[in-house]
Length: 79
Image (cartoon, rainbow, N blue to C red; front, side):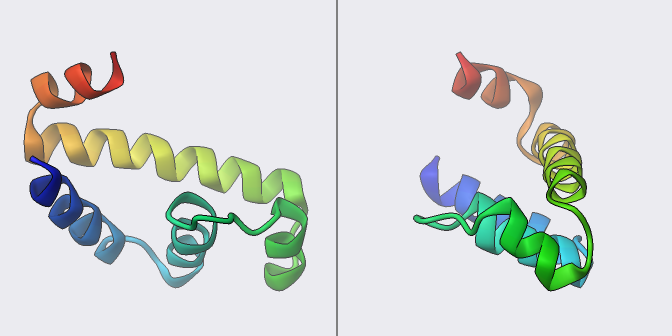
């Protein structure tokens, strides 16, 4: 199951634009996430905007995983 999820994460990353990929890589997949403020400075936006983008990516990920792995797996993983 872990391999299936890792493959799905990789496929999901490919659906993101470059800015969202950077947020995915540097915040959501990093062992030591980059600070919101640092990413905001990199992209010329506020840390609040980066937080909003991160939240949107998480919502998109949930939908993507439900479509590709099935809702039962997602619900089980979140409990």
